[in-house]
Image 1 (spheres, chains in turn cyan, purple):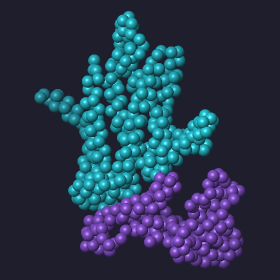
Image 2 (cartoon, helix red, strand yellow; image 1 turned 180 degrees about the horizontal axis):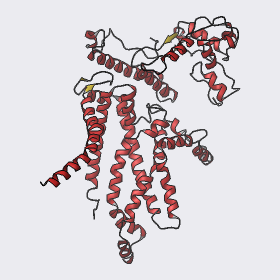
Image 3 (cartoon, helix red, strand yellow; image 1 turned 60 degrees about the vertical axis):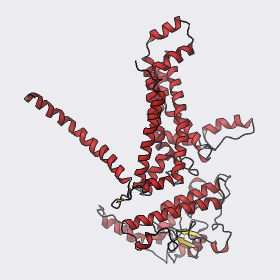
Image 4 (cartoon, rainbow over the protein chains, first blue to last red; image 1 turned 120 degrees about the vertical axis):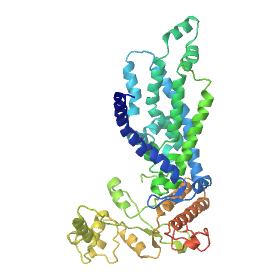
Length: 298
Length: 208
């Protein structure tokens, strides 16, 4: 190594050091610490005491833990596919080249840049059972059939579907990613398919979907990670970490948060975090295995 | 509160809210209903704590404020003569925690049912919340009981049984944790949890 190369190496390493320190202090250490604390009785205020697998054993018998997991999986299983279908549909519509398309793109993307808490407060009023605009619109329609609209967030049966509905408000990010993918599909493929007599649906099914399959896969993985960690909007809309009414909206991340920062059971919360991590990794691997023959990379 | 609610479980402060958000609302206050005579006149007495944190930038002024809050004029006959705790409680429309109320405070309090709250606070049914580290956890669990019963998800007996089991489990865990950290006075028995000698706090404290 020449002296110039050594100097360049030192210079390069010096540039890397701030990032390495950040990685160590803000990511690697907390991750390692949380793994250690998951085997400890730790309340933050006292020194951790090693208790082996007790936190994990307690989790197995914790009915509220299972309820929070069930709520989260219910939400994810509805919100994720619905969100993917809606964002892809919007992206296809916004890729048609109609006049004023930029304006439409901005309008549909706008909700994604609204702060989560502000959006949650807005939806809180939309879902208000008595004064909400949604029930204002539904009341006359359902009245024709002698029915009344649900009270949404105040009803344990409707609170989770309401949150799923609200999640569609934020599809702007994935829509933009789909849009980028759609614009990368070569035009000549559509032209040759059209010459061969392929219908619109045929072109979409046999050209568009396979060509954007990596984008769909990416959004699927991001969606799994995001929906299993849903927190802020539910926390704001259901008035705290208990996930009311009657814990019907107590999601995993909320139970983890309340365990850690309300009950100060940081050891148990760390164990919950690691279980969630394992669950996300397992679902990601499963999704990868199930889609590997359907995702095409050019 | 808007013609659809017959009764809410609330505290003395609700009058202030009604005056602000629903002025003119006709309402009345009564003790919590009880089917057993020994549970009549139940009331939870909670208090705010005022402290000066170490490193406070204005400890002298803070101490003056605490002294003011702790002061009282039991002879006060007008609003101008009210001081300290009674003035604070008058403005917040709450009952005073002091045993003796001044004539002005007792006769001209803005809360039309303040006498009821005064009587409740003096009766044996008035209890303070347990001073334990995991009380907030217990209180949240009891809120769940209210939700389940109110929404007809479970019968009161089922909801309370679930709550009791969960609270008992948390109580045992809390004591084990204290024992592990050397903070539990009776460490020997704490290791033997659960045991009959250290029953968990009953739900709906202080109900048996």
